[in-house]
Image 1 (cartoon, rainbow, N blue to C red):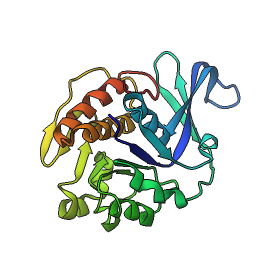
Image 2 (image 1 turned 180 degrees about the vertical axis):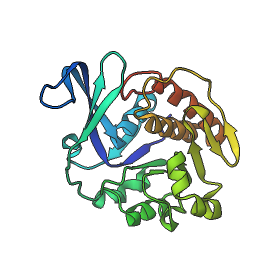
Image 3 (image 1 turned 90 degrees about the vertical axis):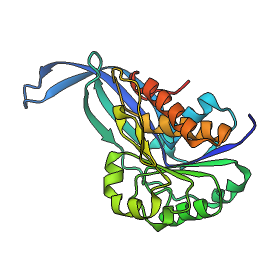
Image 4 (image 1 turned 90 degrees about the horizontal axis):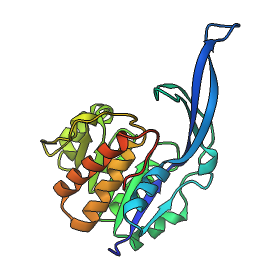
Length: 245
């Protein structure tokens, strides 16, 4: 399929520092971590982009130029996959520039907004108002600037934060993901098969990528949701930020 998809959003590097801990510090009763290995993986909007690219080759991204300097380092136990802590860099992200004018070249737009400064509410409103097929995934509380998106993907916490506005204005647009319980769209529950969850990192990005690719192919939102559920379930059964296939 030759349809073109564009991902827009804040990018970063996810660093997985796999460790083991055999002792407490003699100075303070805190665990001493010894790093066994490190795995850097593109994160946030970059993870969405690579998930799309894994199943749909005709995709581009507009993200912050310094995304490789924006780091989220997770210290994870090598054996159990328990995360001890996450350390984020404080790296300023410049807002999107004139690249925003390129949206007309694409069939589908994915906004992957982690609310780090790359996309303002005005920028999101501009994109949604000037393109007919925008899928929105945002960490911002929803308001009138989101009303022209075609579909909006949110999790349980994001739904509760914007529940009043969603129920009044966005019920036909919102797809609410519910982790291992699947997701809800237009009052219908889309269940997923139960399986062992190893790591939920990046699951939302994988769901969004699969959703948009399938909808771009079929223009059938129910079929797209079912496909996205399957692909997100595959990802959470793996360790770290994984790609759909």
